[in-house]
Each structure stands twice: as structure tokens, then as C-alpha cells.
Amino acid sequence: MSGRRVQIETAEVFEPLLKPSRYKGAYGGRGSGKSHFFAGLDVERCILRSGTNIACVREVQKTLRDSVKKLIEAKIVSLGALNQFEIQSDRIRTPGGGSIIFQGMQDHTAESIKSLEDFDIAHVEEAQTLSARSLELLRPTIRKKDSELWFGWNPRNPSDPVDRLLRGVTPPKDAIVVRANYSDNNFFPDVLKQEREHDRLHNPDRYAHIWLGEYEPQAIGAIWTRQVFHEHRVSKPPNLERIVVAVDPAVTDTENSDYHGVAVCAIGKDQRGYVLEDGSLHGPPHQWATRAIALYDKYDADAVVIEVNQGGDMVRHTLESVRRGVRIIEVRATRGKHVRAEPISALYSLGRISHVGTLIEMEDQFCKFTPSGYAGSDSPDRAEAAIWALTELFPRLTSEPAMAPVEPRCAEGAWMG
Image 1 (spheres, rainbow, N blue to C red):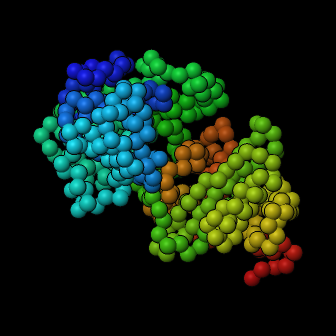
Image 2: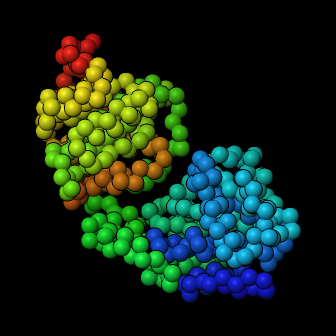
């Protein structure tokens, strides 16, 4: 990529995006260089066009560490252009009095978004997470003559708003979209080559999504769809009435053992369910117990729900070795995982459950549950923990033949009312 005062090496796959166009999109897997390309384009545009204003946005940006700011700063330094920019704590001042700002679209309203009307470029990172509402707010707001909207994303689902817009049946006429993967990146680093090969061998279910930009995998006939997560996802929950931490412990403790499923779920004052965090981990029993208590304290939870089919009293004793007196609710499964999953799946379908943020590994597992069983080669440990938690929070859905809750006991074994 070259201009009168800057020269940036560009992979051939991105060359079509150097032409002026209202919409520019690059989608694909990890290691393709999408983010680096657009960061370099940000810098070049500001140098070649004095006074350029760029809004770098994503759906949720809790801190600047979540933004592309550091990458753009690195591009400025590598190009020897630091004397033309002023890097500030929350923005970058550009040549000629322009600026590059960093914002989360979820923080905007129809009124506040008007502050971006004078911007030349909207650069959207992780565009697969952009909601339909955010896209509807953003598109008419960026309205200056010759203004552009840039999108970089790793596809999740054909129903994601950015996919429908730029890869759907009727994309905008003035749109240039390219697919880029690691194989298109001449600068693909050795460390990522090792990561890619590891996923090819040990994570085949997700390899095509992670590295080739294919849609996320989903079992045929799955009782959860990815769309139901995306439609009801929130960045933060409302006021909560009850919070539980649930644990689905692994049977063994070896390098190849399943994860210990640990999930935090709650009911809000709106009487909807919220999956707050996936704290699942590998390790010996003491580690899952320590993680469960840490999350119990973090969220000021009401109880810890533990599945005791495999370990019996040892599961409870493991937890009590970390915190005596913690309120424990023991549950014991008497039927298959998919039977326990179905009533919780129904709650999701009714729009009564929201995930707080994106819980990638847990959502992958949910999408492998079918009416006839779990279709994954892994164990649904993360999803199972959430299912136990949500079953406890929505007790009317619990059928006695499917699962048998045990009365909660304190550390000394006294019954708790």
C-alpha cells in the first residue's frame, strides 16, 4: 500500500480494499492480518488526508484495552510517523486537527450517536458481534461525502447482522468484501503456525471456524441455535435476585481429563435468567473447589450447586475443605444429559435466558445437544454446569425422574431450611 508520504506492505488479498468504496469488509479466520490491514489503513488515510476523523467501534468496549488503539499506535511507530500524530490517553490526534476515537456501540443511543456524524470513517472490529440495532444506528450516522464503513470479522452465523448486510442475498452495491485466512498472510508468525497445527489435530470441531473463517459448528437438529444466544446477549445484567455457582466435576484428574464445569447463573428482578460467567478449568479437585468459592465470593452468591453422581460425599467434602459453612445444594442425575437440557433449552427459545458477554466454549457445547443425545466428541462440562444452575433457579422445570436435588446441608451436616 503506497501513497505520497507512506508505504505499507499489503497482502495481495486486501488490495481490492484500497479502492474507494462506501463499504469495505474483510472476513476470515485468525492470523489472516485483517486487523493489521485496517489499522495500517487508518494510519495511511490520516496521513494522506489532513483532518481525517475515524471512529473505531465495536459492540462492547469496557476499556480501551478492548479496542484497536494499541495496534494503531504500533503502526504509527513502525511507519516512523509519530511526529505527525499525538497519542492521548483516550484518543489519537491526527494530522490537520482530526482524531481517531474508540467507542462501544452498545453505549450509544439514537441521540448520542449523532456525535459521529462528522466522521469520515467508521472502523468496526470484531464486527460479528455487532447487533442489528448498532448497525442500524451506525450506517446512517456516517454520512459525510465519501465517508466509508470498514468491517473486519470472523463469521459466526449467517444470521449475524454484518453477514446479512455484506454477504447476504442483496449486499449494498457499493461494497467490496474479501475473504482472508492465514494462508493469505505472508507475515503469518511461527507461533501461530504451531497454534493452528495444534487446533487442527486436537480441536477439529472448531478448526474450520477458528482458522478458515467458516461458520461456527452446530450439531444437526441441535436443540440450541447460535442465533438464540446472539439475539438475547447483554453486556451487563439488571439487578439480580438470586445467584448460584454450579459445578459439574470431572471424574478423573489427568492431562487428558475433561474440564471441571463451573458456571455462575442468576435470576434478575425481571424474572429472566442470566449466565454471568464460565469459570470452567482443568486441574485437581481442590482447584475447582477454590474456583467455585472465588466466584461465590465475587458474585455474593446464594449457594453452590454440585453434581454428586460420580464423587458422592467426596464432592461436598472437597468444597468444604476450601470453605466450611458454605451453602451447598447437591443434585444427582437419574436420566441422560439431553433430557436435563431440554427444559432449559425451552427457556432459551422463549427468550428468558441471556448470556452476559460471549461465552464461546460454553455456547459451542450447547449447540451440540440434540433430542437424541450430545453430539460432541468432548464432554459438555461447561454447558452441564450452567444447566444445573438454571435448573436450580427455575425449579418448576425440574422433573423428579430426570434429576434428584438433595436438601442443602451446612458443613457440619445439619439440614438447612
